[in-house]
Length: 251
Image (cartoon, rainbow, N blue to C red; front, side, top):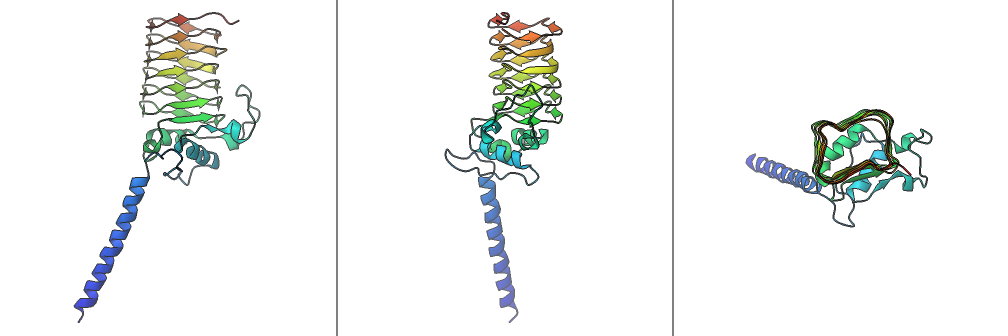
């Protein structure tokens, strides 16, 4: 008489377990997969992310540009500290998480990570990382050093019109597709010692640097520094440029 209730309990446990397993599998299938065109993001943000970071993730996950200037209908000048509030701030840990860690890396669409008008206030460190998508941080203000030494990226990296109040370090990094620092400003040292860039290295159109190290760098496309300004040492010892080297003065 006691066997029947026991069997029934076991059946209930198995059914419940199957339902839980189904939920887990469903979450596994949906999380870490790029959203189809027009779909909402399938991968939920981490609870610890700030509101601006959650907004950036939703935009990026859905193949859109996370443009704070459009969001707030106000374009800030990265060359001045005015107006860069916490509502535009994203953390280095957030950037590292979505670029390098699952399920977020797997959920990135083919457009990659495109962010405009953001502020980063802490040290960015992604040395030896492997980035599989385009990374664009444009018209933004980075108030700390950025260290990307020995980084490998199969796609372009872009810092168009962004300002770095610290240094930017990419020694021995390997970048596919190109590096774009068009109109950027770097107050600290720009270290590209032994960098390998498959495409173009663009550092022109009013870009400003205090010191640039391009020693032993290998550029597969063009190196363009026309209209750029370097107030300190420009080291090009051992530099190899397969395409054109353009260094016309500004004006």
